[in-house]
Image 1 (cartoon, rainbow, N blue to C red):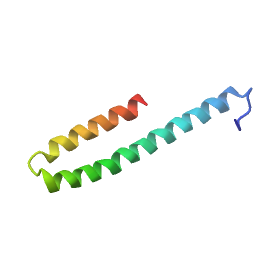
Image 2 (tube, one colour; image 1 turned 30 degrees about the vertical axis):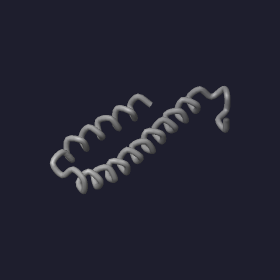
Image 3 (cartoon, one colour; image 1 turned 135 degrees about the horizontal axis):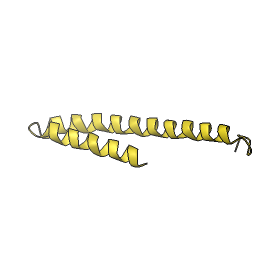
Length: 67
């Protein structure tokens, strides 16, 4: 909305920055939720915590890539 309508390069650059910002925000969300999940799993299920944590990271990265 703030970029000129005729400047295609400025709009493309703005869109790339918006996509980078979105990916960084989703990455931060995955990381913080992963830390909470890891803490919970260590308290409840000490033997399977690492496999569940790795699966959560794979899922989170997949969601970030899809979005």
